[in-house]
Amino acid sequence: MVKIFIGNVPRGADKDEIQALFSQYGAVTVCAIVKNFAFVHMDDRKSATKAIRSLHLYKLHGTAINVEASRGKNQGAVKLHVTNVEKGNDDELRTLFEEYGTVSECAIVKNFAFVHMDNSDEALDAIKGLDNIEFQGKRIHVQISKSRPRFKYFKICVLVTAVVS
Image (tube, rainbow, N blue to C red):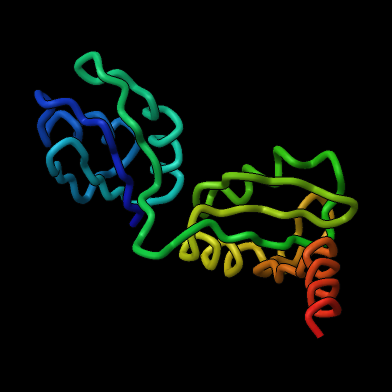
């Protein structure tokens, strides 16, 4: 199940209308309107991703609605590190990860990539489903990226420590 947030819902829109709109892309299990926003739960990620792409900024009663994957409380984007990928396969890699959720960024650098997923649930699903699979003839490995402190930041800290001591 994938939860979708719909913002900027116009006053005249009702639950049945929104449910019918999203049902064009797959099975809708829940649809609820609260003031000027709504939530829709869809059965699978592929349907949800297709609905999000197609309906974001869709004009409902003349008003552009904002459609995006719902972010749970305290969930933010998660950066994944993917090894053993070749440069030039950015679009294919993005498509592969989009089967597990919303990808906000995908960049291949040398023989590895960084893929930014919208939340930790989607990132964990992607790791479970894609780690150690074959992609473009090579076995890829997917894990949460371990950020290193930037050199500039490190240099500033050393300088401040030296001055303070």
